Length: 89
Image (cartoon, rainbow, N blue to C red; front, side, top):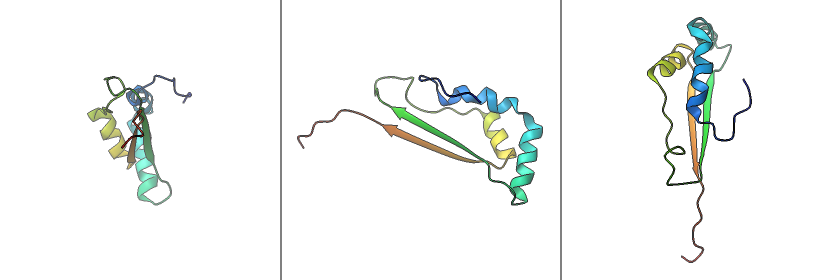
């Protein structure tokens, strides 16, 4: 997989994962079930513009969720909001 583009969205990686195919997902799932592997999808989203609809939310398709379930993958989503706030509280 290539390094993410600065304005990439988490959904942009979905076609890459789905292209690995269901056979690979099943093979990973077998390894996880046997205790020989751990599979995870970790998504990190930084929100810097609270008014930007492009920066908010992560949408995962039913196809991707099915692939993750077949591979017995865990899913970790971390979202961080960066904003300027006044120091005067």
